[in-house]
Image 1 (cartoon, one colour):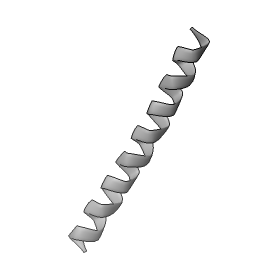
Image 2: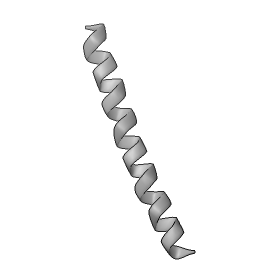
Image 3: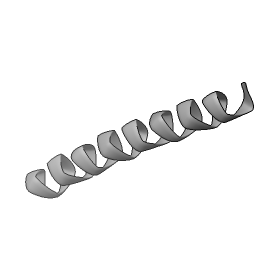
Image 4: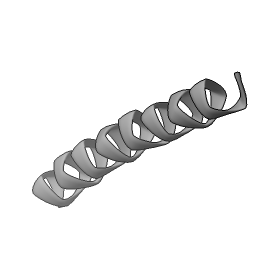
Length: 31
């Protein structure tokens, strides 16, 4: 169970980073 939570945390962090990169790229395109 603990391993599952750790993996979810890693996936969530990666997703957050990807979302931030996407929004940043979108912002650059809008400029």
